[in-house]
Length: 142
Image 1 (cartoon, rainbow, N blue to C red):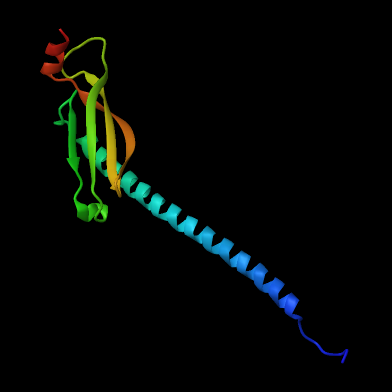
Image 2 (cartoon, rainbow, N blue to C red):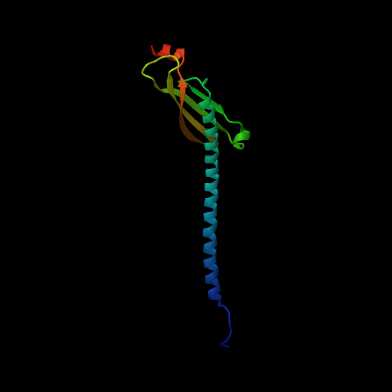
């Protein structure tokens, strides 16, 4: 009976063990990839929200300077997550000659936050805008 073909029981056990180790490794790697994808999705949403809010702040010259302004995002926009923002507009630079209608440079610091379970996460962004000085700016500098 030397001509029989097939695998011995020992060969089958070794092959099954190797296959089991490989499958466990692949599944644990897949779990890590899924966690990273969820975390990256949160950060991507925060970046998009920060960009939208920063665009609004850059174009709204009525936002008060030198004080914090804050708000919350609509849950329909955040995918149901609790999220909000805090911003501060400060005058970064002014012309050495303070005259009406001269230009000044404003700095906008924006922090977008969101809740990840019980943990609060945040993303910070800063931007600059040019604006014309008003009589109040000139009077405040004197």
